[in-house]
Image 1 (cartoon, rainbow, N blue to C red):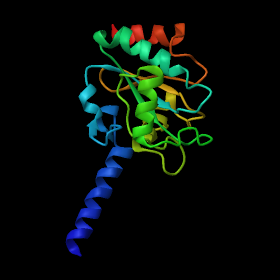
Image 2 (image 1 turned 90 degrees about the horizontal axis):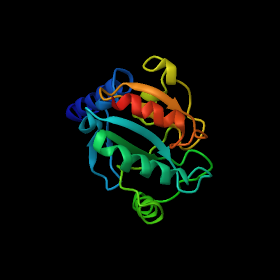
Image 3 (image 1 turned 180 degrees about the vertical axis):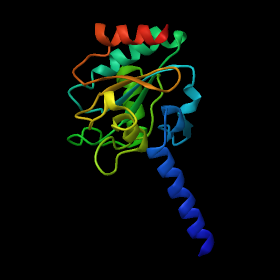
Image 4 (image 1 turned 180 degrees about the horizontal axis):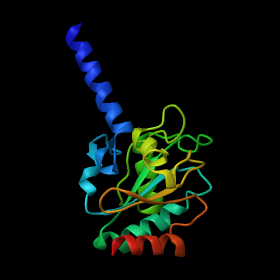
Length: 183
């Protein structure tokens, strides 16, 4: 009993530190679509575009532009990272395997995709608590309003900018911000 309490307390402290004490996205570990724990620290030194995605959304077509960004800028240090979420109208109902198969067959996605998470509400993943939290990131704070919200992260893991879903990945606004971050 004492051992399990210690384990529970340690897990709680670790989760709290990740949720509330993080200063960069590199402090988070999330599961890839295949279930492999993937520390975002693997992307230190890279610029990231973090996107909550869904397969049955009016913005799902943005996968094509996200893949194009990945191909255009990956050799310069951009990592597009997709985080499927079923928080809006049940638009991501599939399993992680189904999500991966859809993204690959429909859009040829080769950028990193992660396991389905929640990006809003009481079950919000710690990464999204960090991205949308006023204390850590006042300029990008606020609940995610819909699928395909994009966060641009600098090479040191700091949040640079937030783009709402209607702002296309290939827009001048997003492209200029990525170009500036890659310099």
